[in-house]
Length: 127
Image 1 (spheres, rainbow, N blue to C red):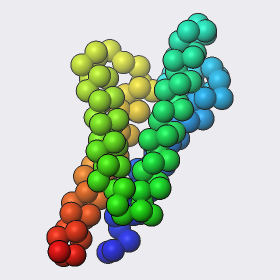
Image 2: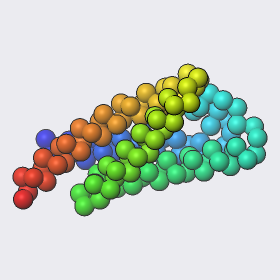
Image 3: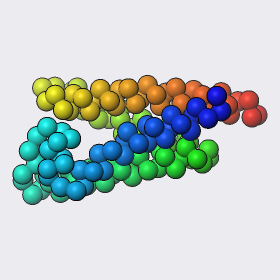
């Protein structure tokens, strides 16, 4: 059970890091999000988003191995994923690919919530 928190945190980190592949270009972004990214300004913004998600994921993966970083990794993960979920559903009318991303974020948030609870229980026992 003591390995559950780091395993879950690393898994959620990997889920968050997968979009970093979008930094490779418009074709990858189109396959991830189901929309053409053919305007240069949008391409820059979306590639930057990919890099930022990669950084969030990398931080969460590092935190899986560094318990002192876990609280901030939990907060970062929740902030990233819950903000996307809120934006996606507040706008409405999103395509199937973005609905899939939002659903993946919902599942990842549930996993992250479980890891947070496990982490807090372990921390209480350590006191």
